[in-house]
Image (cartoon, rainbow, N blue to C red; front, top):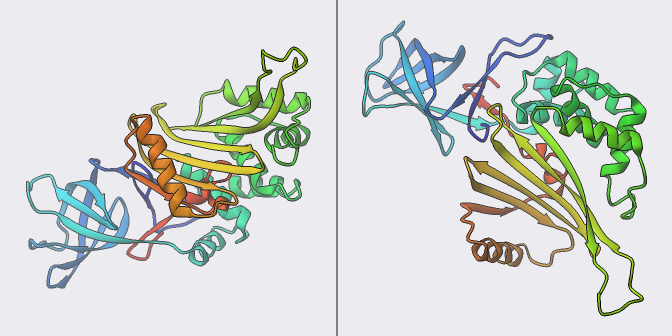
Length: 329
């Protein structure tokens, strides 16, 4: 499921890619009844995907109709447009990592963590799952030893925006964004800065904004004339196809701690916050403290949860999940 809807993939896979359709809550979809199992159980086709359907009203084999989609707590409700009260139920389940790797193998892709990461990035940006392009990005990312994930993110972002970059540009942008390794010293990295400028001046899904935390000089002490960089980080902004903010990721290093936040937006409101603070003594106390900060700022957040740092780093694509409908991913 995506933030705004349900992502349905065709059962027919090919090496050139996987057809998919994102069904948002309130979307209309074509439903066809293929087979009846009795007792209100049916096999049907929804957006070209075969699924198991439960219905309180009798349905006929071959029957076809348009329904409105809504999803809640692991169940998709399809309400036929000719009915005001009755809904058909489809249960879906999250695909575990092992099954996802099997899915990658079926696409002819190496079933490793880099392939999984690129696949999640494509889903996050709402892109067609193109196995040839995923393979190209993965193979290029492998050139950047120990920075493959960050490289794959940059390559996926510039690909989505129709940009190109050479190995040196990618490497310099990695150094520019990898705050911890650089010990708060970004250096010049001119090619990396130029590539970052291209990314942020081109329409598309992701925008990347590095920043420094500056300790200003104390005006009461004349000898303190220089500003001190005491930390730094990066803000990543994800926009949907309508150029509405969908997700904001904040990564920051300050006082020997790493702070990671991923804010999910529903319209103009924050619907979900996932975060991690390195060396935290208590997850619960950190959640309580963050809730107080939001309350003090008069920001109403529906959910605030602690999450593993590895899932929140970079574009936080590790939060993306795939779901199976009737056995089809």
